Length: 125
View 1 (cartoon, rainbow, N blue to C red):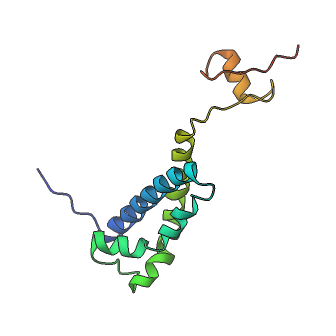
View 2: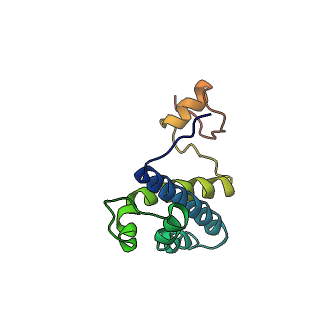
């Protein structure tokens, strides 16, 4: 079996995405318990440089020093953090969508049989 070697830039990106996923899950769980629990994930962003260095041990050539990791990793971390925060929070509170209008896309999907959520809106007609 041939061993695949990733470029350091790819290792860096994957590590940042992993940290965004971890902090997102923690934020989502914390937000279900405390109103401002999602701030925990934002606070954890500031240790992304230490996490990256612990995992990959070296930096890509375009990042001159460890302090520059925060700037380089921001958007990748933010998108993963936001997605997994909302996903975890929605799962934990057992979110169910509501139909507020018989003209909404959700209502149309429910009445056509394409969705499995209940709608309590009476049709106008």
